[in-house]
Amino acid sequence: MDLTRGVYSQPEDTLLTSRALDYLAAGPADVVDLIGHVCSLPGAPRIVAEHMAHAMFAGRREFVRGLDGRWMIGDLYPNQRDAGGEKREAGSGTGAADHSRRSLSRFASHSPSCFANESLHKLSYVVVDTETTGGRAWSGDRITEIAAVVVRDGEIVELFETLVNPQRPIPYFVTQLTNITWDMVQDKPTFARVVPDVMRVLEGNVFVAHNMMFDWRFVTSELSRSTGRRLAGRRLCTVKIARKVLPQLSRRSLDHVARYYGVEIRGRHRAAGDALATAKCLLRMLSDLGDRGCATWGDLETLLRTPTIRRKKRRASGLPTPVLRDTTA
Image (cartoon, rainbow, N blue to C red):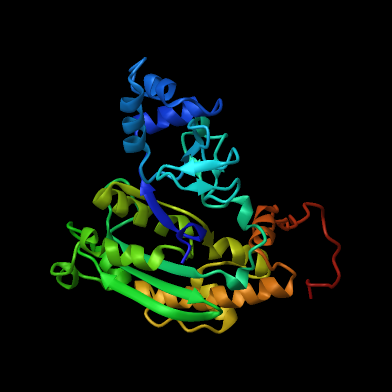
């Protein structure tokens, strides 16, 4: 499986890698000049600079090395080598640097243009749902349950689910919603222990969820806390797809979308139940997209970027209305 075609993990940005991205935004640089700027070591011996660069950029897809030995930002130039020394053709990597944010300090890898012609029906997806102690992914709340459903070739081929010990109390109102109690999770593994299983299911598949950013943030924060790495790669939100495919619905909650497609949700507000229902809705929406001529990843991106035309409700007229019948009798 080509992991770069879907979700993967990569080391988090550091001050040094951010400085390197800023410096390389101007173009390729010799390793001595690069390390001299990034590490404030002007004139460092070349062999020392080489070792420092390889250690700093190991496992980072955004940094590549040209055939002339100079370092550069991935996919911006032809004839590159990644941090492991393997040659990469132009446009064949995981994305290009994002010029619009922090002067290339973030790598925009989730939607490279080389994937535009890929058929939506030939991609593999992983539909994720998380139950949590609250809504603050980076401010104290934790995952209590996670499920991931793999969809490939138009079928559901795998379901992964597990309760997770959040290492903190579960608020009463959350238990009322999810029916997940502290007694259910206190002896379950922490997220750090299930990370290998979670990443095995996620890697190489397009990340999908209903209200995707909620689940993406929680999985990313847990991954960061456990391993010092972060999620990267392609992702889709079924709420956004539903807005395009099902404009006639008054709401695009999972309940409304599932009801429209006749999908039964067994275990609402539990990770496996919601993930399975979302996966079945995704398959129906992909079919609807195909009927509308939206067949490739590029077609879908274009559709999702198109502004949705919202009908304005007509305000009741303030003018007097004619009396059509006698109501005084």
